[in-house]
Image 1: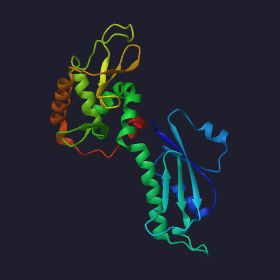
Image 2 (image 1 turned 45 degrees about the vertical axis):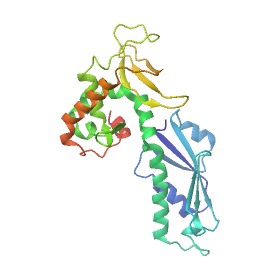
Image 3 (image 1 turned 45 degrees about the horizontal axis):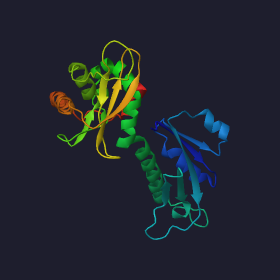
Image 4 (image 1 turned 135 degrees about the vertical axis):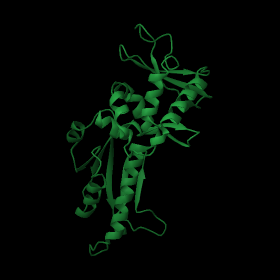
Length: 257
């Protein structure tokens, strides 16, 4: 899960530095740093921070080449600065703007991909649950998209719909599972995605409101799947009259809470 990105910018020329610096200017979860030391990076990190090293290369950009290359495995972005800088240092501002847009796209795909937003939801469900009354009362929070996909809508469910379904159909979303905490009462089920490594199965994500313990349990048979899906669909149909009013991400909702 990634909810913060540090750009470790390796200085080569001031204009390319500026492209990296401004690519995440509107996103407080992106922290650009020019030639930082390891101690400086560590001071800004936690276990959900991704560090991306940013380099300028003077390699000629050939026909068909993208002016930036992101290597996910090594966590690096290479910018081919000769795409927008000629030998004399003159800048093609249209091309430079295109490069900035491409950098922003890479960063957005890291933070806002469905896989990452799902991981954010799993990590922070307790906070979302505690803040559900504020979410219910605020349309732009309620209709922020989760990573729970609805085949009926061919879109992602609003986070408020998921929380409403769990609250209103509590009996369906409470599970009695062995091996968890010893608290009275049953934990809440807050997700049950399909997995396919080593054969198909479900991952059941539960949370105990008493002690705060979360669990992930693997099962090949989940008998309540249809009931949970029906509850989510019923709740979504009831609230879909205001769909589309929010431009906030789930990360924005967490910031508000």
